Length: 594
Ligand code: ATP
Image 1: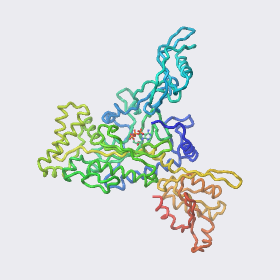
Image 2: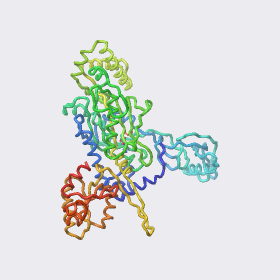
Image 3: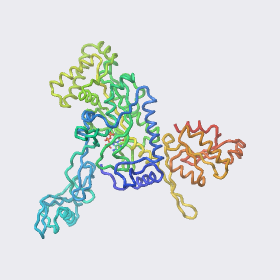
Image 4: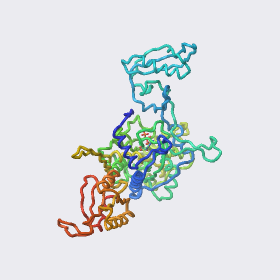
């Protein structure tokens, strides 16, 4: 999809992120390295909060999900089995004039008149270059500028006084074959594998090639048996993992949105095949309506589990401050789905540069575990006593029907993967017989989210600015990062009203010390109180606690007049202030920031 070249809001967000220490360009002192970003002090806290919330929501708060932390470099056979070695690529092309690189499928569609040349001749030396070339011009533009560009192209090939040969014009509609910036022809697209290669061990031969993982998910499949056996979980259950992933993106862009090193938070939720659910429960429940289907039930098949996870994930985003109105669901069309996938929903966020993917939730059938079973030779199936018993009690015609369906699905997978028909038929039959004995390869629902994209969404959603003009006509722009308190990098700032009053400063420090073990707190004495509030607004701190004279002397007026040892809490988003007892501060804050 074409993306606008400039984006004022993104520039403002980027500049605030740098200025306040959310995000820095990696290796900046050496000119940076494209597609790599570092998180500064505030960004690191924000990111940590997001990951903690995901981890606790997905694992600790659930009975049916456990965690995994696997290595980044794994046996290269994993990436052959998963299909990444053969097919994890993007089409790439280069400008024939400037050498600038493009992702071929992301070039905006262009129309106009293409001027083609068969080659060119040097009018002085007589030397000829027979390489064809073309330049696209907007309709109605005279051909001179195409000729000028073409002359530059042939000059780069050693001609000094260029005479263009065989010019002809062609009308072009919706083409991605030309550089949108200068009209020059591009090289034909070639697939470019996105995995970063490295070598394991000192010999660095082709046999030592390994890959930095392009996703965290595969480790979960590779360790499925170990986790299943040690965690005492029964299908349906999930395994969650978060961590670094690496993709050598052709054109990293949109700040951190498309990076070359990033973090993912992925869940593989293993479920029974529908045939097994039907055998045990009599029928597979069908989705009654859109929206959250409620608490998981034993008669859920893949469709309801998929719907459940889409809704759970949206609920998560809402719970950390991304309103539903900022999100969209995109249900992939059948022709867009990978051959093994039953359904895939992308949760999109309305970024300043367009509505784009935040997370994908795919129903991936039993493809992944089946691949690892075939490629490693290690069984990936599970045994389910309840299924075995239930199957035995079914009427023979039902048994045959379920076995036939399971057989057909297994045969489809095996033949698709190139297993010869007779062998595939025999294996699929074995699998169908296995089902009747309580054995199956689990299917999987995969909610796969990117940490960095979520951070960017939270930053974009939080950003707000207001410009105020004073009586003298001097204007000042104030920035407020309206993070949900659960993700805000700093939860509370403790500020003495005046720095040079020892009793205020000592009390503020003591309050800060009492809070910092429970949450990210900040203590700031420098500058006017207004400036300190403004600094915290930019950092997105939801609450500022001020220790002032009334803390010691007692509240001046109102129903609580005379009450001592209170503090003022200032709310970031509306500037409202309230007084509470210092002793109630910790529970008050904890109730709001967790
Ligand atoms: P896209 O089509 O945008 O490249 P994808 O469909 O290839 O994304 P997945 O393979 O489904 O992405 O990865 C799951 C999640 O990982 C994405 O939804 C996204 O949040 C994150 N992600 C993927 N690639 C990148 C990247 N290059 N930079 C940052 N995050 C990424």
